[in-house]
Length: 176
Image 1 (cartoon, helix red, strand yellow):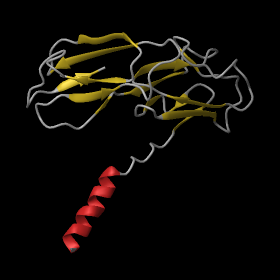
Image 2 (tube, one colour):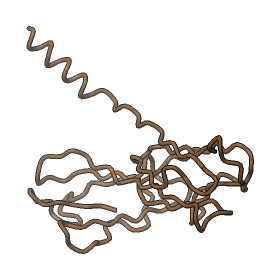
Image 3 (tube, helix red, strand yellow):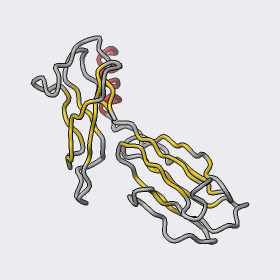
């Protein structure tokens, strides 16, 4: 009976929803972001705010205009963004030559038995904004190959029915 109780507790813990990732904090100083490089999980948040010692006008703007905190301002900056997978360079539009940073969000892979298809997740939900995702993979240190192009989906099963490749035990698969 005691063993059944332990198994039940372990099963409940395994079924519990994962804890939400902590929000990553980035401070805006007079000529830099701290930290300049930030890593977050798919669905993770990054929050930018002005450092107390900063007096210059600043903002946060992604290079391809995917996000922007607003016009440069000397006032408080309180800006949060939720991220899908990808690499997102950003800058202060006034101090862009020296004041820039990057948010990196790796794809999320599901656990699967060795040599079996697995789920790759690059967003928390399917795109309803017109945004499209491009997903590449490589086996070992081989060449990067396009797996998904211009997709609105939030993820897909890799290796299902051999698409795009048959998953093999002992191989390393990388995604971007």
